[in-house]
Length: 407
Image 1 (cartoon, rainbow, N blue to C red):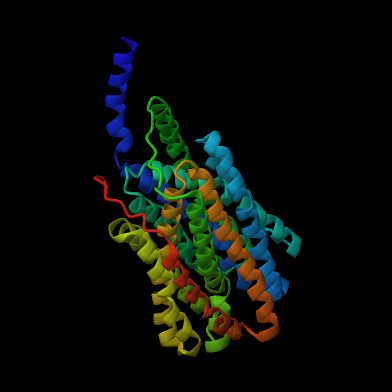
Image 2: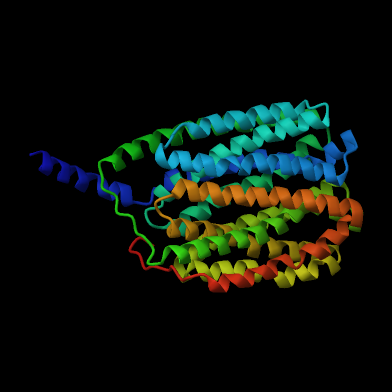
């Protein structure tokens, strides 16, 4: 009797567990939008903080490094822990860290307080991403690339909206107006509470199932080499992205004489193009194979990055949109590729790749800030133009494309 009841239970739950749950996907994407919107307040406020505290580019790089390291070092550890003990409500605590960092940043009166505030925001991000990425994976119903693109789209949209709101709310007023972003954090807490209830219920249902994990037909050495290649590609992508997210406004101000607000709107245009690229990258990986999307999206940006330092203002805008669209399509494909290489360690993989991405972004920002102080901000873009050429190593990735009834 118990065996029959268990079998019946599985027949009831299996279709639910294998279905793409779009309300959850869009909810976690919206939560990602809020998380990354609040993160983007930090670089968007750099021109204001630079003027208020007379900061050097090196100090701006150190702010980014402090934030990115706090967001990167903890992520693999959070992922490793939640692989063993999933915590549906952990993201709420992450948002509370972010909220406290935003409050502190709005009233920061010294460089050291700025550092503490961005570390708090970074800790919030490190708690959010591993579990959020796992929720996206679990709600995908097999459409993993699409799910990751929807999830990433939320983050990229938040990164684009944040600087726009800073330009409209904070730039015309004072640093203290950053406090208005607390409203955004409260909305995030409400959304994450609802997602946590679904996740808790989903975990309970999965506990009644004997989940079949689809392992790649590769040796451990080949898997390790592939993960290493993906991490090198992350280095290339996020070092270049650091030059755009942290210093693009300064580049436009110095080279073309734009105002802070005008430069911020150009940054928003670039970040919006990143959102578009993110949206298309995952589904293209589902359809054609993630290896080819990764190869194109990193290496394919090279012609545009090489032209950017020589362009006038009009073509700088066009090229920045092309770069953002192409290079941002890589991350959903890279992350899902890594998850398919190590399907038993979703949280660890997500934490490792998000953490490494943030770490490379922070390290890149610090190094590029130091270079900008010594060589000038325009020199940074001549130097970074060659980074996407590293994408050629994606040729050595195995092809993991699978035909799925769900995709």
